[in-house]
Length: 127
Image 1 (cartoon, rainbow, N blue to C red):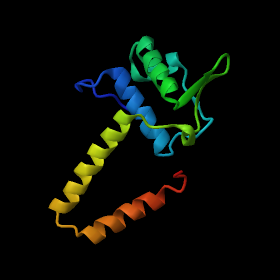
Image 2: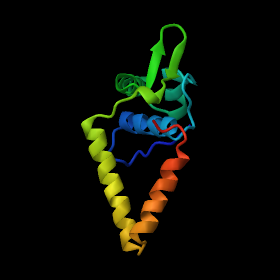
Image 3: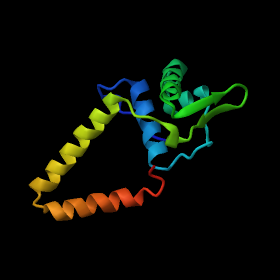
């Protein structure tokens, strides 16, 4: 599914959250797709099941997944997710850094705008 960076300052549960979000947002995982159980994912990643449970709880609280008693854990429809102010700030910082990189490599403003439009258009499911 994904790998963890044991040398990272980000806690393992946070890495699991980030990786699953990325898989959902990038379209690798789809709405209503069943996720591995806590024990299965813990075994795959060789981490404590409590760590996976913590990550799943955070993802459920954020609206990325839902847990159905007796059935399992499933990917939620991300079209219903509302970003938190912190997530918007993080995205803005990342976008600002990317725009700076384009500027420093000499890309014109028009070309950068065209690239951004192209990348946004690739997200056919964008709300």
